[in-house]
Image (cartoon, rainbow, N blue to C red; front, top):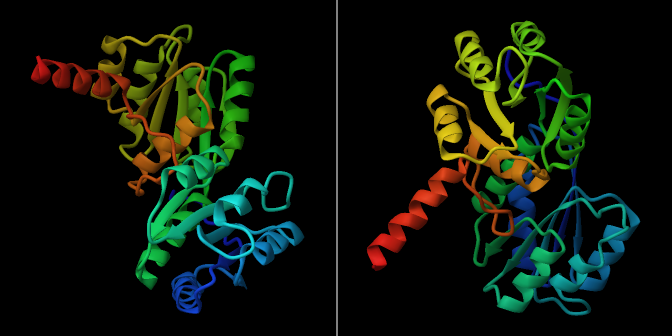
Length: 283
């Protein structure tokens, strides 16, 4: 079964003091009207942008960094506690200075788009948002009820939308995954009887399309290499957070890496190897 599609409305904000930029942004957003109902508000300055963000829930906001009234970073910094506090913020400008970048990162902006941009550039970002807000059925596999609860909380904080179910053993997991419902599995390595690597091999016998993320307290190159060999999509060392889930999902779905997102590899041994190679080259 493919990904479960839920057609949710998109409430967008376009905030830029340049009418041409606003028009291009609106045109790019409207490219997706066949997929989602779309409502677009626009603002010519930062004060009006913040007023709109405070008055209603906005899902995705394109905010110019340099605007009269309030700057883009000032608007983003004031979002906490508003109905739009979780919106996907895309900063736009001719350039990105270090001060603005620091503020935008601190207050969880998502991406930066450099001017001049085209409607296709905008449409691509909105396409990513559409993908992120598609519901992905995922199965958490762990013999510990406490760990399943913690993993559920992390998934619920992700930018991606998950329909979450749980299994307390490899056998229960294989029965659930055999239904064809689940797009993803998040499995622990340490489980009695059948460990995560064996389970992953059995899942691969069922389907080559199910994304498998493995979690473990161990951080050994051997375990990660074994996981990669079996065909696991990514490895998570406990404790992990929603940012780690977002990185794995971007990579798994082959989405562009956001400017302000967390950066990490699907497997940490890849980064360790690159670091070792760089040190060897510099010696």
